[in-house]
Image (cartoon, rainbow, N blue to C red):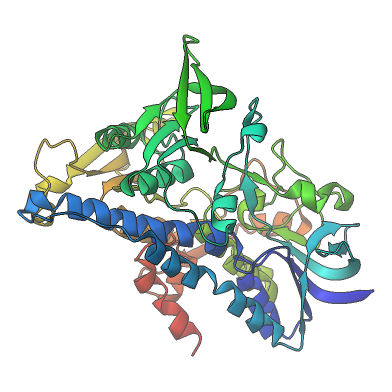
Length: 503
């Protein structure tokens, strides 16, 4: 049985940890059950944003009349858009080739599962197995679509983001589409397909679209969707699906009054959220603690309850974003392979995770919502400024009082004037959010103890210090510990520090 210094399960953000381990001359095993690059590259951030960007251009051209520009028609070449998308996604092959060149790295193609706390079994596509052991094991397996139990859904068939992007060539836009789920994934797909000419019906269980956004942003996006003739049904229980005359019919009922409705479409996209892959890992064999949803519990140092096993990314249940996973991976790489004493270790914090939904327009936020801040006991006041109030906003075509006039909303602590949260809806919201992200991370930070923490001797010792880190605003290294929404264009400026650090 082969033994490695480091076993890494998953090749998304964990590649950052792999690179650090390789540079530290560790023997490394990398296990991947699918394509290299993780969810983001293969079926998440990157392919969806390529489609989103094309959809944005369609809308901008159609709306150019606001600026006095008139275009006869807009023709979308789906085949060309798909080719551009696959050109980028197929970089997964080069990632694998990159790791295979190192003498201290072994790449395993297969599904990982635990045998015990130090042993991992790899099962390949032909059901052949091999077991390896590791001193350090990094779990970064991501998540998968949570498919609800709905009568007739399996029989009628459906698609998810995995199956849509898993096809050799995504199909032409459907004539009609039902989307189950009004969170970021469902709303982004609704925007894309609607812009490409699909009649979209969105069915949402919650009483709001994008329920993790501030209520004002959710209300704005509902209005925008309705203006684009996306049919939205909120507060719905999905009851059943059947097929008639080549169409799929979804029956749902209002959660308040029980009124039933039926919606028809060529296809159904299931996008109500994600679930972890801990069942595939058989975490119970290693004695790993998971929460009620199956996510692996970790502390501020990404430690699990089992010494020598760490978990990062979607599988630990702390915000399913690639930039959050990158941040965790860089924290872990620093702590394990930079040879710094524990007193100089980094830790993760989840009170300032930026989030962007790439609808049209974009939504972006960091920190508390107004309702959340009030519930937490703050004395709250807010400040709102609309795009139309700026010269550039007017140049973009926004006018005061217009239904599409986007805004930035600050949620403030009335007593200290501290910014508790920032919420933006409008063009390039992802870029406009970045200065606030930097502000949230600069200065002196004290370790944030979370209720769901996993105790460890190291963490317990460090908390007695207490542990603090000071991030100077103008230090290039501060950029390393500041989250940047992915894949926002602000990565162009924020990631410049990589080229400095690699000198």
